[in-house]
Length: 454
Image 1 (cartoon, one colour):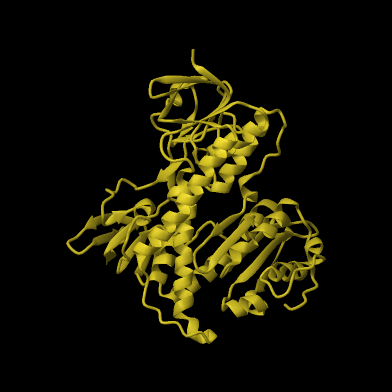
Image 2 (cartoon, rainbow, N blue to C red; image 1 turned 90 degrees about the vertical axis):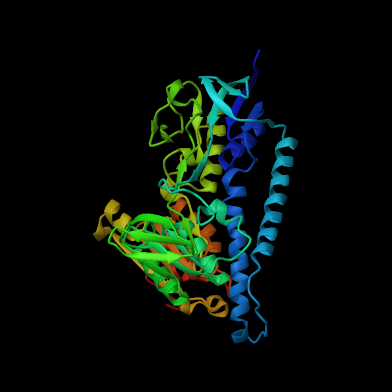
């Protein structure tokens, strides 16, 4: 007889292991199937390693500019092999911690490649396991648009394994991944050009944020070509050649393909069991149920934001749903986002155009607080803005920011939006001085009509 669990999870990334951990807290027996390493993309080839690289980039920038702060540092360059060693140490430590946590919580980890073979069974390397409830969390992978991945044409996965800094790089894609790598490589000394087919970099952000980022990237020497898609990428004797649809040609040592991530759902037997797929994504209802048996889907395989913390939230949500606790649905619009380039971007809620579309242009009011007026930002040597979008006479529905380290302010920003705070609610709070956090209070005071330093 097949071993049976209350909850059987396919995929041990952020979403999958969150579902497993919360399920055991409810007293459920849990099986967690993973063919590679626990922690998934986020821990091994995404969030954690890229942020380690970006921290090294921040240190490099600080060293280069130390003289203006009265600190004499002899900057000799970036040893990428050492950066990789540092990154690998962080990842290994977190992986060990996660493995130990799952063991301590009595989650049974089943190693191997799973396949859904019935509405309540998953087969792993010839052995069947039953689940009263099944949670699909098979994650995502880098899109390549059919380009052959090699030593010269790489994705973020290969980029994180490089032990040398490229002299020049073309980045295909000006979204989050593309901008983060372009930023880090520029700090390391690479000559970077971003190719983005849409009219702007980070096209999902608020127009004010986009304008600030593009201006900052130009100042840093990061080149970018927007509004035209690439036609082909070829390897040359010296590197790569990228030809755009308008005939423009760009050449560099390597090409990073950063055109987004696609769901990993092929070959797992989902469709054979009646689960609906659209362009590879698993289609669910608003409560993440697939419409088949007691099967749920979470994380990057569900259409929407592909973020680790969305995966955590959905994993917890499904565990609570199985427990009968009727958890509150968190819409993607209210999930906080951070892009860790320099300058950093944070955003939650509606951009100004999206708010005007939903609530009516005449019903929206916005304010922008310039970080030039913020003491801590001046100390850090950063410019940027905090932008708040509010409904007239109503709550703040969007908070956006750009500037060095501004991602650290996303915590209060998402509380403001998710608790539907009014400008006067936030304006009455005391924000410690001197911090960048004050900028949120200043923006709220301005939106309330009573600016202090603005």
